[in-house]
Image 1 (tube, rainbow, N blue to C red):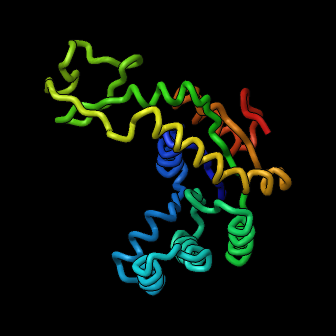
Image 2 (cartoon, one colour):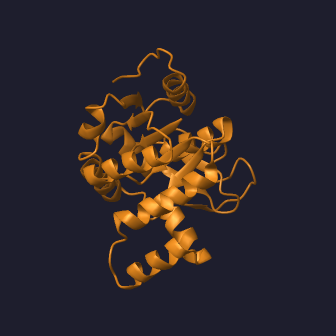
Amino acid sequence: MNIILLGPPGAGKGTQAQRLVDTRGMVQLSTGDMLRAAVKAGTPVGLKAKAVMEAGELVSDAIVSALIGEHLDASQDRGAIFDGFPRTKHQAAALEMLLGEKGRTLDHVIELEVDEEALVERITGRFSCANCGVGYHDRFKLPKVEKTCDVCGAHEFKRRPDDNEQTVRTRMAEYRAKTAPILPYYEERGLVRRVDGMASVEEVARQIDAILDGLPARAVRL
């Protein structure tokens, strides 16, 4: 099973991808992580990528495809979750060709749909314990005792500097711009499915499982 999992920052895509890795033995192929690892390891593809990045240029589709190909070979019969690639119609076609060469097919493109206003509230309200890292929220999960962590009892909390409204809206705009070129490409092939990214983690997981298992699922849409 090979899928593309789409969703803007804060939609829970990372949580669902990790769950699929844990429960189904899939491998998450994040182009950013793979590039950094290849550069650090000094692999042939990593050396090419390093030279390109040091020259201030964008890593070519050919290099990214080669990197994905290496990881597909290494993962053997494990299903893949593609993260960060493709982002253009040309890249989508290149991925289709690469999968064909590896004897694989793309089974689903799953998008976690979100409401922008609700997502802004979800992200901007987040904060965490500065000591143990447990997460809280201004509206949905406050500490039981004011200014005291439920887990470790610490009194210091922190917020991510980029968890602000302007940054969240900019990320949403960037996501729409990046996914706009590839969604029609995959919709023509009948591969796109959408789930309610604003639902609970458990409900989103149920919807995704229903898609992967080929079962009818409430609130799962073409």
